[in-house]
Image (cartoon, rainbow, N blue to C red; front, side, top):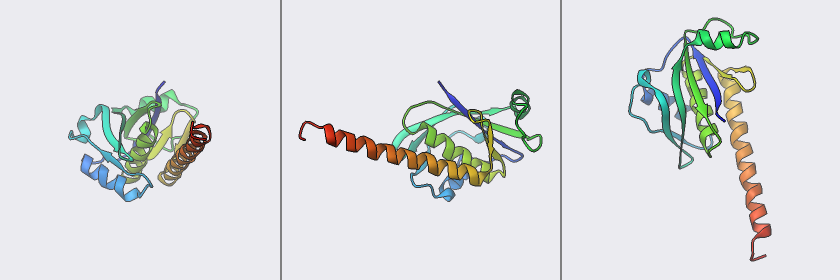
Amino acid sequence: MAMEIYVLSDLRLNSLAEWQRAINAEHFPFPLQLLANNSIADLSGFLPAHYEHMKAGFECDHWDPRSIMADHPQIEFGHPWKYALAFRFGARKGELESAWIAATSCARATRGVVFDTEEGKIFKPDEAAQRVRQIESNRSLRATFDERIRQKFSPQN
C-alpha cells in the first residue's frame, strides 16, 4: 500500500541541484542524495535517491492542486495553491524518510506546506522538519531494539 504526501506551494524549484541544496540545508541526521538528472519540470515516476548510504527513493509527480483540495474539502488549505508535487512511497526501508525529507526541504524552499493525506493534516516547514526528526528517531530506536533482540536470542548466548 502506498502512502501519499503533497507539497503545495505558489513557487517551484528551478532544478534538482537547487532541491539538493535545500535538502542539505535542513541538516537532518541522515543524508539524502537525489540521484536523478532530469529537470524538475520532467519529474514523473520513481525518483531514485540514497538515504543513509542505501538505495531508496519515492514516486514524485506534478499534480493539480485544485483536485487535491477538492478531494479533501474538510481540510483548511489556507488559500488556493498554485502548484502541487505528489510524493508516493511504500514500506521499503528508507522510502518514508526519503519522501519526507525531500518534501520538507521542497516546502521550505518554495514557501509551501506539506499535506499528509493519511493524517489529513497540513504541516508548515518547521512542523514537517520536526516530523522527519520523529521518523528518524523512531527508526533509530527500532534498529537499537532489533539489535538487542538479535543479541539476546543469538546462538552464541
